[in-house]
Structures are given as C-alpha cells and as structure tokens.
Image (cartoon, rainbow, N blue to C red; front, side):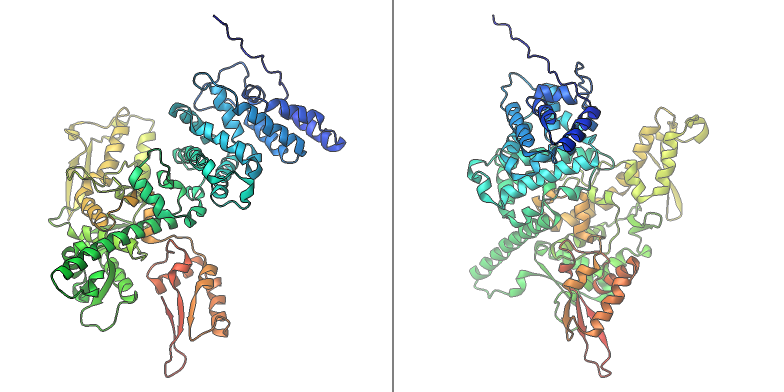
Length: 627
C-alpha cells in the first residue's frame, strides 16, 4: 500500500503590523519585492491562505459560530491590494487558479471552507477581467454540500456590514454584466458558460439566508434586488419556473429575493392578465356558439353601488361576480352620471376603506400606540365583510391602486401562510409563525409587559399569581379563555413562562381571530390566486397594497403632467417652491388629498399620474389638482 505523504507545513508567519510596515517601505522605496513575495506565497494554495489568516494555525477550529479567521488581517491585506502594482495582482490571480485547480479526494475540510470564505472577499473580483476565475470560484462554492453551506452562512453572518455589502454588490454586478456585458469581447460566449449565473445566484442566496437569519438584518432586503432583471423576459423566467420548479433548469424565480418588487408586480399582473384573457376568450366562444352578440362589458368587472348602501352593495356585487374578479375594475355610482376613467374606482376604494375601518363599524380595532389596525376578536355570525376587505386588497394590487390601510407587518406574513390556497380545504390558513416581536408591532405595551415577565428575576408564580388563561372584554362582558387544556389550573412559573408567553401571543394573533382572518385570507386569494405570490416577501405584499412610505417630491415634480399650464409658468414654479419646502407631514397630506393615500405606488412617482389642471371658471382664478 502507498502511504500518502502530508504536504509540507506552510512557512507564512507574518503579522498584520509587519505587513503594513512592508507596504509603507515599498511605497517609499518603490521596491515591492517583499510585498510581492508575501502575496505570492499567501494565495498560492488553500493551505497557505489558512496559514496566513487562520487565528490558530494548529487548531482545527470547526465552530459554526466562529470561522477562525483573523478578519482584521484579511481586511488589511485586501484594502492594500488595490494600490499595489499590477504584477502583484496578477500573481494573486495565478495563485487562486492553482488553488481552484487542486484535486480533492473526499469531502471538503473546514480549512477548505475557510479558504473559500476568504477568497470570496477578494476585491479584484469586481473587475470583469477576473470574471473567468471568479466564475470557477463561485461554481465550486455553489457545489458544496448543504452542511458546508450551513457553515458558510453562519460565517457570513459575522462579517462586518461593509464587507458583507461589498461581496453582495460584487455578485450582483457579476450577474448583471454576464447578462448585459459592457464589452462582450471580454467574456466568453454566454452559450459556453451557462453555469455562471446559476452559480453566482446560488452563492448570493447563501448571503441572503445569512441576512434573513440576522436580527436585525445586516443590510436591507432591497439591497439584494438586481434591477437589471427588470429588462429580461420575466414571463419566460416565470413559465420556466412553473414548468420545471426547482429542478436542474435554472430560473431567477427559484431565488425570488433577487427580483425587484417592480418586476414581481409585472409578473403578477401579466399572469393575472393572461388569466383574464383566458376567461374572456371562453366567454366570447360561449357567446358566439349561442349566436349572441359579444358585449365589450364582459371584459370588465363592472361594480354598481349606491352611496347609501356602499358596503352591502359592494359585497353583493363582488359575491355575484366572483368569476370576474380578475378583470379590469370599473365602478358606477347608481344615479350619478360619469364614466369611470380611474377616479370613480379610487373614490370607491377610499369610501369603502374609510367606512369599514371606522371604529364604530366594529370590524377592526385601531391601536394608537402602534398606529395600526387589528382584527376585532368579537365572534359574529357572518364573516363575509372580512372577505370583502381581503378582496379589496387583491383588487387594489391588480388595478394598481394604493390603499390607505395600516395593518402591522405580521398581517402580511399571515396572508402568505401558505402563499397559495391549499387544495385541501381542511388545511388551516392564515396561521403565521408569530413571535413576541410580532405582537410588539400591534400591542407594544402588552408586549413590553410580557417581556418583563420573561426577564423577571423573582418568583413568577408567587409574585404574578397568573394561570394559563386570557381575559377579554366583549361587549362589556369579561370572557375567559384557556391557553391550553386545564389552563385555569396551571400556574405560570419561572420554568413554563416562555410557553405561556408563546401561547398568549399565538392566541392573540392567530387563534382568537381565526375565522375573521380566514375570511380575509380567502377574499384576498380569490383575486390574487397566482403562484406568483410565492415570489413575494410579506413586506412586498404590504408595498403592493399600500405603496411605499418613501417620498421623493422632486421625482413627483419631474413626472407631473400639466393641462392649461406650462411647467415654466410662474404659478407652477411658485407651487413647487412651496411644496418642496413643506415638512414631510404636509407633503404626505398633499399626496393623500390628491391620490387618497400618502404612500407611493410600486412604480414610483411616475406611476401616480399626478396632474395640475387650469379650471376655466368665470373668476379665472380657480385651480385644480387632479390625479
């Protein structure tokens, strides 16, 4: 038998301080030989990379929470790299190629993972001239086992925000320039390297997972969006995903975190339009087969309501026309002249929301300390009005209307639990995996009290004297609910208080409002019945329904249309001079006055169709702002 001889132990022993001294000497003297030798030796193999940057060279250091890398040393070496001569940078790339070409026998070691972790942060990979090497590095990382990926994810979580963002941006740029190269001649033909983009997206997904597991996230989830994808054939991506799922055929829809909310909205609306076309085509065929004249109104969801019976009429109309919910919405107020060019639809939504969410209506409770609405837990015989609210939200998404609704984020998490309606009608819907942080978004004072219970250092049973029960006032009567069987006889103790808090939160946000939320869930999904919903985060559903709270009045000024005015007119210049000096609160009020919501739709200010018109009144001084 042949005995395998272990490789020679690496000789690298330089410290960060010594490295920096070498850099300074090289800058002063112009002699970069010592620095060249350091970089050349360090990046010559995975073994040398570990020898230089590992905290303790002889220790295996297999901790999932600590990568065992001297991060300061890595950052110092990389920060200096971009200011070194080209031959040093070339020697590093040559060394990385040597490391990547190494033949592995058996599974990767933690030292191999450490080397991948360090090499991935190399700033040279921001240059397209290095992309062939970068692609092979990404391919090897993407091909690692699930267990190895788990280690990398936890190591990524510990990276400084700046470095984390740099790697994410580098990966996004790699994908963008592979899709639309600025200089195509610099890169191999796309047909010959179809694995480049899937590999980069897979590695990016590891960073996205690390970001999602961090509380708070290291960077905003929007920083993973790649706006370049807005310009590809999104529906082809969607249909590939629908046909092949998460199989070997790659689609960006397998990693929806990379698709911007604007692109997701396009997918949802086009998917809806296709469903509408199929329904309309079938209706047309049916009409023709019965020798009936086709009616153009069959292309629309026509809602006729009386102002004095707004909720009941709307409920009746949407219930009767359930098969037409995916058609373009048109609203008529009975007894009033006028065609719905968009204004009547917005008014219908505004009036309905205002009436349904009024405290006296009793469907929702407004919590002043969190500035949001939550479902009333009072039991009733008919939950159809909750279904109406869900349908309204779905209609708003499909008709590009922003609603002035204030639900907490956990509402949208529950709305996607599950993201599509289960085929088994006995499967519970709207039961989110809720935590005390979710409760804090609805009832911050109660959440604070429960946190105090969890951190209380005394005897919980003797000092609080609580049991596994909840007391709620309903129509002036105090009702008692057990959080678990026999809860009235189970005292809350130091040992079981975590269970008590979790059951309490689950009761308030799930169980006590189950029927109300179930109707709400089915109402929303009756309109938004699309697999495209699986692409969305809860936060994105909220933005689709309510718009974004980020206001850019300069962008609104840029996209405003004028009727009877020129943008250079003195009146218009004065108008914008005043509006741009408004406080944020006043700017929101102006937006709410003109559009019915103080938020911006997904497409930004350009989608608001904000218009300033001159009204020819007899006094010649009346002006209108239209939306």
